[in-house]
Length: 134
Image (tube, rainbow, N blue to C red; front, side, top):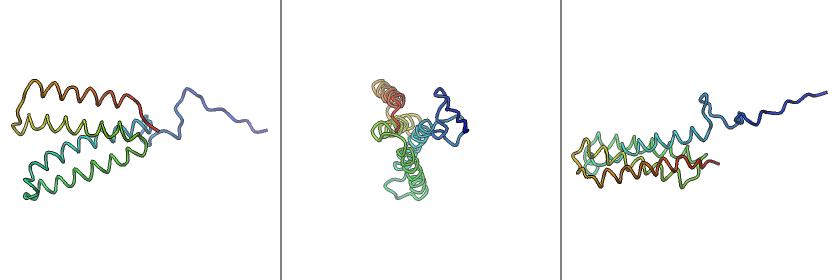
């Protein structure tokens, strides 16, 4: 007689676990979106520093950051809904680029700009917490 043990419903499905210990696949996908958003900041900054693709190393860095960012976003979209993932990706990129510009590139700093960046960050956190994975 075959004795089958039913899986514990309180434990995550092992088939839905990431190869990284302790992470679910949707958690890993959100981590990819966050890293992709940070890389988006890199490609936006390098785009400015390339001066219309006339400077070699900022142009090369732009290409590397863009390829990495789009590549990671593509992988994440295999597990996440496109709307929230795209919004989080662009939000991180927009906020990161604005902060980098103010801190390192001499962009104008204003109270309205800082409050607006904070609102973008709060929105990004809210979308990430919405838990949209399929």
